[in-house]
Image 1 (cartoon, rainbow, N blue to C red):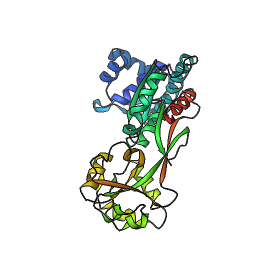
Image 2: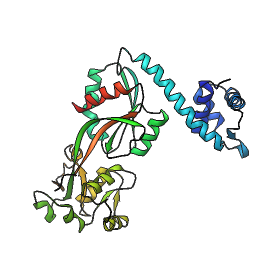
Image 3: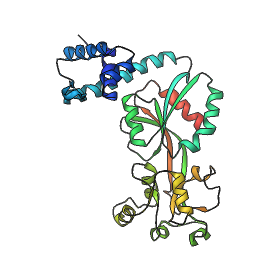
Length: 301
């Protein structure tokens, strides 16, 4: 006997909700039906998947491994259905797209209008999150594609290029560096540098743009560890505008009206590494690959 897709869905929902009652509601079945499905799955596999001690729902070690395989199977099953439905009508129906926070507000507004005009049957579901969590959602099948910035480890994923986004130096308008036409990374080293907090890939891209993430650049990382960090680009710009320090911003953010109050000035960095690549990524082998490429083409235009 083989597990059914329904049983695997029950396991996935149970792990997400950590409650038989909540998982049953999400599956639109009764609690006894869901419990029976989990029990049947355990019987088919011959292992215990759930530790039900003290009223908690905790996956056993083999349960964790089973869940990973179940998520892959369910993602491929969804791919099968969506590929069949979209064979003659690309980008129609549901498409789940993840976008990193340092791209979403600047790329999506105009792009969404173009997508709506070009693909009126598309139902686009958006999720804004940090890169690591978007990739985890892609691999688990919770997303169909994502827009992120490179460099980043793309093991098990395919991608297509959208555009290059220059990394710019940002200073208070009355700062001496604002009088220069270009700014060297060395000139920023002696300043109070404010970046996004850990977890945002733009932080690493900014360090890479100045070649501060290379071996021997530990002095910069040490100075950052005790300094200021922002949770968003809006906060970052406000901190720089208040005179708390200098920073590094992506050009798409600077050109979007984020600097409209004229308290912050941006200047190009010297060097040839001051940029990030914006790409669309998807699971390697996904049937949604043609649609992801079509989406990238629309975003690129």
